[in-house]
Amino acid sequence: MKRIFGFIAIIFLLGIFACSSSSDDDDGMMPDNDQALIEAQNYFNNTLRPVIVDKCVSCHEGKHNKNDRFNFSVFTNARNSATSMFNQVDAGTMPKDGDKLPQSEIDMFEEFRDLVNKIN
Image (cartoon, rainbow, N blue to C red; front, side, top):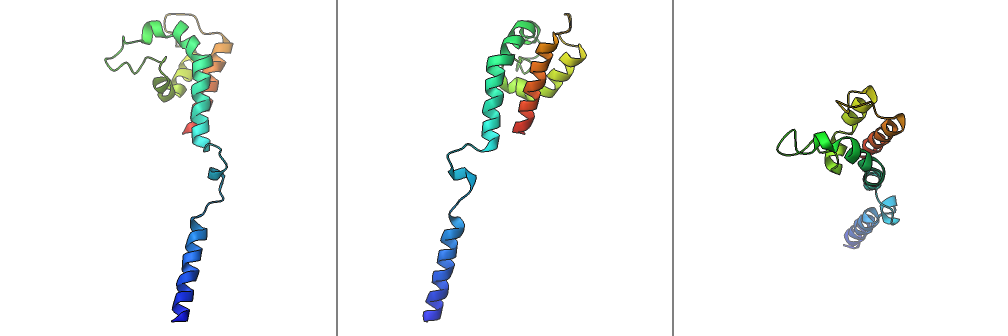
């Protein structure tokens, strides 16, 4: 009988230690994915969104479809299209009826794409 209780006690203690965590999740830091999302949102709001509002919204806001998924001044829409946006501005196919963006602005799209890729 003592052996059974001893065995149960050992299993119980192993269970407690196995469930306790000494991982990085307990250090008060955000998981990498959350941090990457916050970095992408901050970069978008503070750096890229003003360029999009100035150069893209006049054609892409509510004119292409009813659900407005091409309004790239909205973070979720821009996030979902980050690679496509970069490829098009880098190739000079967007803005469609305008001059190619300056390299400094193209670099902003590239940086945003790279930040979004860290989320996924």
